[in-house]
Length: 105
Image 1 (cartoon, rainbow, N blue to C red):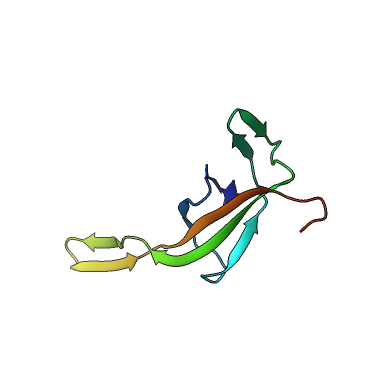
Image 2 (cartoon, one colour):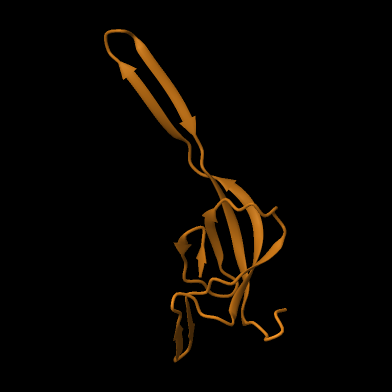
């Protein structure tokens, strides 16, 4: 599946750490950009996406990454500036990988 411009190989029940989503935590959502389906010996490769499959996910929480410090220092002037940054991520759980029905639900 593809989310946030990155591709992930997922299974049912798996948790993923992805870029921060605009969906509030605790809400379910559906991803329809499925790139490949593997089911035992059955394999479907999309061009670029497999139509008729979708992944139901649950947005568990928003987490923050490790703090990164950016330091600028100039030796003779006594200039020293420190900036910090913590990237935000979303933790999602794959609830099910299912074949979409024909009526669009």
